[in-house]
Length: 298
Image 1 (cartoon, rainbow, N blue to C red):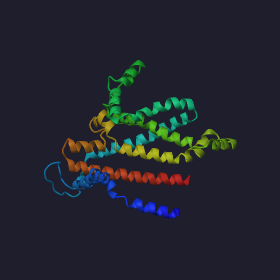
Image 2 (cartoon, helix red, strand yellow):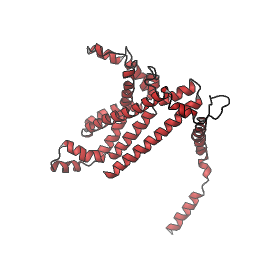
Image 3 (cartoon, helix red, strand yellow):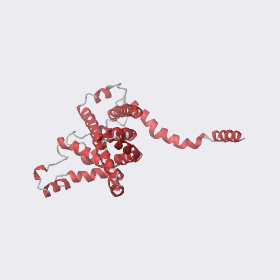
């Protein structure tokens, strides 16, 4: 009798009109699928955003890999993705390890480290643009510490501007990385460390043999999210440097915006967007495959 009721309920559920999801499906197709397909098509044309266009084949894609500005933007994008991912994980894991064993300190400092994550990237860019300015807080602090020789226009020099952008991104999102690692650490039973200590293992040995393997799922998340975010970085760069000085901090996302809305080269910007999309997808799939395999082998 229960089986009959279950089957009747299943049949009734299957008879619910599919058009209940029609509006959401329509919006998804209109706002995401259609623009993606149309944009990919326009990448093979000479469309300027208005008027007619003609098919030019792979000319725009060839230009992406021969244009010095595009190559510089892609190089900056890859640099920021790798740099922010590495530093963010080091800082986040260090903070998580420091707060994991101290409940009072954790309750006090966890909101402090997480607060920057809640700020809009545009707001963060404006704040740190002021801090890095020649008359900003950083140079003022160096003057107070009698380190005037270290003062410089941090965002005005190609050698330092990109690093300042990377530091700003790490400052904003290290708290999120910390929270994910902290959740992973709290899922590790203390009896494992007690057993290892009884076997004579020191703190460093326990870290490599217990903490690192059991944090593999958290590592997967904390590598994928910052890396993909770094490849798509736009807001902070736009507000802090606008890609300058020159093109030393221009990212691929910023160049896509400029080519489309400043120069009117919509087809070329779309081709660059397609290249960036493919690059992000491939990087994510490779990283996910490697990190997942690492999880299963632990």
